[in-house]
Image 1: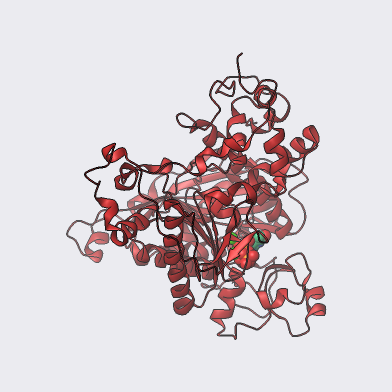
Image 2: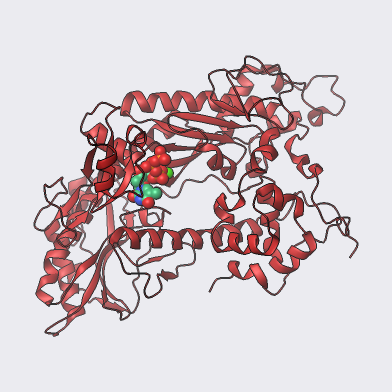
Amino acid sequence: MNSPWKGKAKATNQDHDDLRPTLTYRHILSNNLGVRDPLRVVALCDSDAFYAACERVRLELDPNVPIVVQQWESIIAVSYPAREFGISRMDKIKDAKKKCPNLLAVHVATYKEGEKEPSYWKDVDTRTHKVSLDLYRRESNKIITMFKEALPTGEVEKASIDEAFIDFTRPVREKLLERYPYLAQVPADAPNGMDSPLPPPSPIKWDNLGTVLLPEGTDGAGEQSNIDVDGGATWHDVALSIAAELMRKIREDIHSKLGYTTSAGIARNKFLAKLCASYKKPNSQTILRNQAIPSYLHPLPFQKIRFLGGKLGDALAKEYDVSTVGDLFFLYMVDEIQSKFGENALWIYELLRGIDRTEVKEKSALFKSMLASKNLPKPITQPLDGHQWIRVLAAELALRLNDARESMPTLWPKTIVLHVRKGHETSRSKQVTFPFVRNVTVDVIAAAADKLWKELTGDSKTVNITSVQLAFTGLEKAEMGQKSIEGFFATRDVQRTFLKRSREEDEPLVSLENTDLALPKSSDIEAVSFQCTRCRKTIALREGQATGGPSEVAQRLATLRSEHGDFHFAQDLANSNEGSVPVPRGSSLKRQKVEPKGIAKFFIQK
Ligand code: TTP
Ligand code: CA
Ligand code: CA
């Protein structure tokens, strides 16, 4: 094959040609260039020490109080004042208190047998209580709502319980045209009409917009902060600076209205925005200019990049004896990697260049399902003892459905599913149509679930149930037409649905789409498996991995989930590569079907 990379087989700095594209009037006047828009600006905004901050606000504490949030014996969030004492999430409560005798440790709220609402009980026990993350979900929704209200033409995608991607491209373009109206008029003497290059922008005042990362070859320690003016700026830099202005204002509003500090990363795509969001935490924002992408990416240990971590990262490190993104970038043996990775070579190639074309897209506002689950440290052995756990899970579902009904009064789950794991046997589940009722109370839910429980346990005298999950699926917002809410519910036949026969399934039919379980990090997962929203497969921890404390299991599950997510991300990137990928012309780096070998096998779904 006649590849210009043959023999050289190395990347050069010219591979970064996409960092300074020539912008024309057509670019600035088009509003639908999508992920290939050269003026694209994306931010990732993450809340600082989120659960700890929620508890601090709830308790109306001084922001300087050192506080940690505890789940059973583990620490799950550490406030920044507590971090000053060297406390981290890895510490045991006992050790954290040794480091800081005044430490305030708040146990996360729990549902307790027989209680309808979660609360902060004096004595909590994983054998009788279940963690409630409802406060954090509510506060998270308030923050997301503020993003959306501030940016009616922006796109907001909740990425986890405390972070969201924001696509600033449209709001920024509106501001650009408002501030520089001459950009909207193609000059009469422009040589190529709409396709003529824009005039150079005036210098940017970066002061007070956050930490601006420095391009290569500039004096300084990697960042430029509070500098007055900046020559050499591009229109993309102007776009970044406008996004930074809007982001700063929203972050200030969140702080003054809700009391939370946040940190944001602002760059040309999601991958880079996420990567620089935690550059300076807490209460900060970092701007990654296109020219600074190579110098920011190259020194990073590549295994720190989420998609290049884990087993794939280990394999890469072993195979090539490299440690940083820059090492990989310059050592990247195109043909060799192509033969090892097959079509997946492309996305690694792009990632090393700071290219990511994934969209910022709001997941449907409608939760398709809601799931409450509990891993039982002490298995249920008497069938009658199931009832107490069913009530605990029913209380959580009732609260979450009623919360959601505040904004969607006709939200109704078509089905309720009960799923149990019996020792090491495969799990079983049963489901039944859920009655169409106005008041979804704990009693209504528990009645349906009790029935399913009886069907699942049959006539057994003893059982060995180690995990119970209760879920609403098929959640839909029903059309009300002209009716009032009361009239709307009154017209439906409530009882009929209860009489329908339940259906038995080997595997849970729970679609986790848009539940918090679909998020990479959620410590409320007290389960040993999850169902992927993309491929619908149930992905479970291997035998032996499902042992240990709830937080250890949750950690392992989170790792598994993140690896599985990376698999899909890799696939998406590989599949979105038609078109203007900056692959050197004539390179053999093309989409080819190659049998997976070596590292490529990490991309292959088992
Ligand atoms: P993070 O955003 O990872 O951490 P954080 O907000 O506590 O701190 P930072 O300022 O560094 O962003 O996680 C958000 C919340 O998710 C965190 O407050 C608690 C919860 N969480 C867990 O329950 N278990 C975990 O292992 C992690 C990483 C987070
Ligand atoms: Ca956070
Ligand atoms: Ca986070």
